[in-house]
Length: 539
Ligand code: HEM
Image 1 (spheres, rainbow, N blue to C red):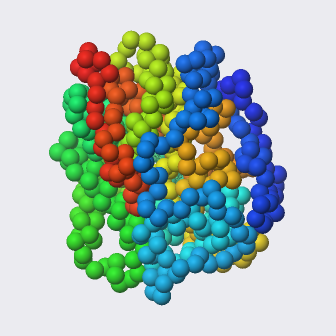
Image 2: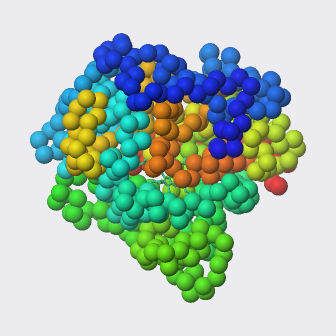
Image 3: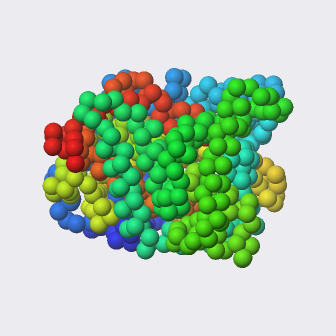
């Protein structure tokens, strides 16, 4: 959160910077410096600001929980079966191929069966690891310093590669997927929608939409939390960016369509041609969902064009720039990009956070205490409360560490270059996995443990020149996420306003698994709503 970043707390350490792109540690097992030297503690959004919030009950989450608590509930698996824990993997220097490639399929089988385990194990094979994802050859960058180099040089490491070639089928050439040559113009057009002045109004919409969904819950009812949070996020995105010009019937299929498309993008990325064109039931579902999402958005654009009204929202802003060169196709691509960006990622993060809260009684109690203290008798939080929801933000940061929704993204090298001393010719596909960085035992002691107290003296920090953050759930550099503040605000308010009225009880935590789609969602997540007090069930 930009506002919080500019207001360092009393215990914050000054950011440590990289010097002119040095090699931070000599290659070789055991040669890495301790994580805190590579990634020193920094000021950040999780920094407690008011002194009162650094005293109990808030500080209760640190010592005891950090030392012994915050472990997953019994049987909760962070990895799908066969997933590899990153802690014990020794790092190997240099550039090597990943083992286990099959003729024609390459590493497709491993990436379908256990994608997270496959990626988490790659640092054991080199700083750069060559893989084959179905039709695509790619090199996975496994060290933070080389990832930093890639992110900071968006001209050489341009948008492209397997993830974006498939994502373009859904999003067209919007600001997420477009090449360097188009990027600055498209980003500039949309930027005003994310100016600080707009966030208070967005927060009001976020609270209204959360209440609209949670008002339908009742004591003891089992909740499909991912579907409900997708509805909250989709309606919020629509209200914030398209002034609400989308009817509920058009949105009804959205949660399912987003899940189908996310799975489809990932699977299609791994299928060698011509297998990706065979009209299997899965491919037909993917095509249907993709078409429905685009036509849902197309309907809103048509409505705006018909009325010609300026609603003062993102779409009106984009329409107004048509004269400057946004074509009709670009307009559609932009609109679907923001709708897509603001829906699945947010819904998934809220769902994972609620899952982890529901499986750890001590975190849940501390979280409820913070919510009750900040709300002080009110049943819902608003924009002005955000700064004081310190533990809630730590929980979100830790959720984004363990479950970065965008766990994998790619680039295409535009001109011959060098990476970690290795020649990388133009046309090379480059893969970056935040998941791999976030589960590194070198950077995050006991990486599989859900432990919000890791973020007591630091927070989410942007990737910028000379500075490597500890986690990168929002990517970084010129192509870093445009919606980070929007997302953090929405997740914080949704979690708070749910907790103001409801406890969510885990139904079968052992059944919860990360899905292997383009976005890292939870499958098998079931929660039961329990009113925290009878009065709070109704409003
Ligand atoms: C938890 C929520 C979110 C996560 C984890 C997330 C993650 C990311 C990541 C990792 C990237 C960079 C991808 C790359 O470098 O290839 C990105 C880019 C982007 N995100 Fe998000 N995002 C989130 C929410 C949002 C929201 C709410 C919006 C819009 C309202 C949004 C809009 C964008 C856009 C437009 C870009 C492309 C930026 C550019 O290339 O200039 N995101 N996001």
